[in-house]
Length: 58
Image (cartoon, rainbow, N blue to C red; front, top):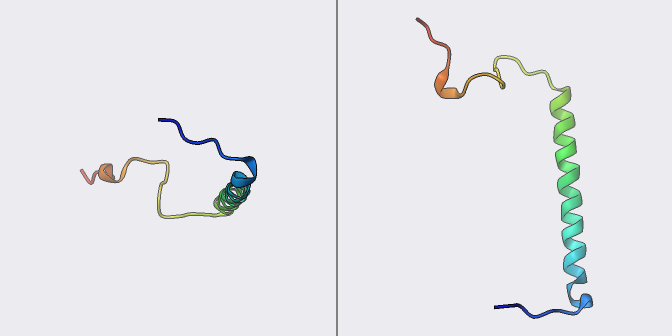
């Protein structure tokens, strides 16, 4: 079943809202990436083994 084709003026507010939301998502992602790049994390190996495969004490 096909939907009805709506006039551009009817969907324009939704398109603007989606564009604004996408802009905020890009901004937040870049901000978090910048914070992570500057951060110094100690006590955890984020690139190491999965949690279930912790160091063996053998």
